[in-house]
Amino acid sequence: MPVNIKHPSALLMPGWVETIRKNAPEAEKLGKLHPAQLELVYQQQWFNLLSPKQYGGLETPLPKLIKTEEALAWADGSLGWVVTLCCGAGWFGGFIDPNIAQQIYSDKQACLAGSGAPTGTATITGEDYIINGSWKYASGVHHATYITVNCNIIDGDKPILDTDGNQLILPFVLDRKDVQLQSGWKYIGMIATGSDAYSVSDLYVDKSRCFKIDANAAVIDSLLYTYPFLQLAEATLAANLSGLAVHFIDLCKPAFDFKATNIRRVDAANVLVMDEALKLATELLNQARATFFATVETSWNNPQDDALLKEVSNTSRVLAKIARESVDGLFPYCGLLAASPDTEINRVWRDLHTASQHSLLTFLE
Image (cartoon, rainbow, N blue to C red; front, side, top):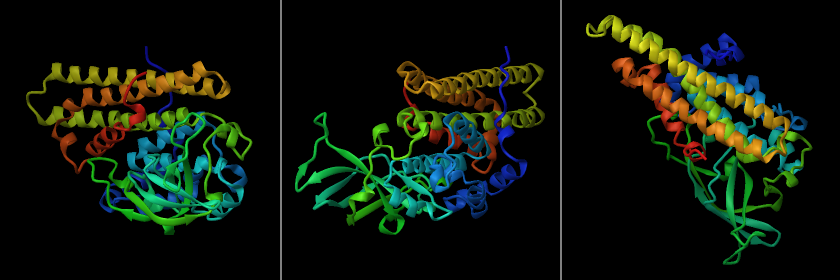
């Protein structure tokens, strides 16, 4: 039975979509968002979707956020991913020292980027730290005004342990000027995310630049900053794969028509097979989308319910799986049009298969 769920395009002005898509091929050549795309992001404050209202951010509730991010990923995978990862880093504004946060968000084009990998060290020096390390895959780092790093806390040559006896890892927020970017993003998709690597060498950092991602450590009194980060991250990434899959499915009909009119062996029976495959993929994806959105909404209204949080994790992974499988099931019917790196449908395919490698969405629980 068909599911009544809105197409992602319902959330975006046609002019926005035109700007985003028209400049997507050039953005791939640049290896980062095109200036026209970036200007739109600033105008709509998409980098600030999760930033605290008291600093000028939008502090968007999670159910609305994931629909917005799905729509942006539907418009273009790289733009949707950059907005998702950078506004996700902007969520840290709910935990950062208010004096530092005021400095960050005084810039109307403020953008945070970073990596969650704990591949740096922060050595205690008095009450402050010396940071060293290198990090990979920071989406949107070329547009960042501040960059976050995860560091192993060290005292002299001894690791500091947390209350469970494990290595203590804490995040820091650094000025972009103190970070060295390094070319590192050489993959088939998400090319315009510019998800390059970066490093820091012997950087003295005031203790106020350190923060802790924990509901009890939030400095902003809002549900958004007490909702668990894991499920927030899983849901926002799954929404991107969903948007990409919807975009691919949208492009299948013209691809099928092109194939049917240009290849003599594609007779009426084969056309029926393709149309049925497209119909089934659309229905399966929309059902997964509907379940996902409803689950996130329910969890948002009951944030202390661990069973619902676990269901958010599960439905996020299921949606990611169905998005991948739906696209892969349709790809063989699209002809060489879908295999050409110069076509929109190929870019969507490349973006989805690159984004789907994220470890948070790889395995079903």
